[in-house]
Image (cartoon, rainbow, N blue to C red):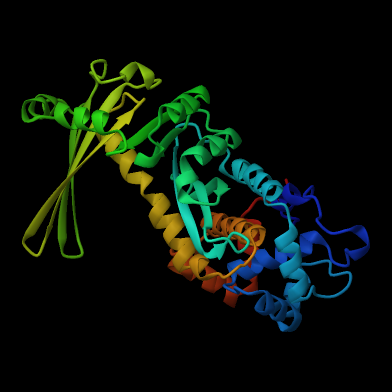
Length: 378
């Protein structure tokens, strides 16, 4: 097998150990943790046992100058590794794997790792993630101690990402003037959810879409679109209206690039019972209503394809890591594994990440395929 190019993105990581204690290659430890994550092996002891007593082919992927690193060594090194340096290396690799964000939706949202406490403090580790919907992959992340810091974490994450030409979607918490300015300043566009954290603006946008205005907008496919879904015993009808007259909004000039207001109405019928919900957005995009609905719906992939998968398929919330650095570093390892699993070919009709992980556990040749999906040398 050709040497996977992705390994080179982590070659320059600073080793946290003093030189006299470096009995094991840092790259061996990282690859061990990555394979353990792919193969659903979730603890230090079980990772050591898998490589110590498992198939010889696994050990053949590593240098192992002094045998298999012990469980204590894995724990100490992953806990001491600088998560900022590891995160930057991960983002450089992810950017290369993604190739370009031009014209793509990059959804940003936060997730708390509930089982990981910040060095014994009361707050769990909170991670703000960036997800490229078209590639189904993680582009980057930024760690903070508590969810309330998400507003300040988003601009820091944006500084680390190459988002030229992208569309950035953020829920209501990230609907901030400074974040709009930061996005436009990086050559990207935005779609912000709007709720009660901006009560005046929220109410103004809702009142804009009165019955007469909605009827007027419905006359054009550029400003109105509806889409119906059926399945699992329910019928869902979504309607979207896009309004371009934003100048009269309160403080509209303070929202850099603001061009449109959007309202989406979801009507769901289950067993004869119908419920309706209206949500509103502001955006720097001036696009068709159909395209706008597609982008808004794609934003929720970050919940369904990233956060849910990390919790359910990778068991992230159940991971009890005492030290903050260890929790964040293992979170990065999971995202490397997830990107590879998403990028790998899916044989035998398998589509879910859980099924792909299972196949990589059963078949060494497919594990090599997954590891190689992170890029080969030319």
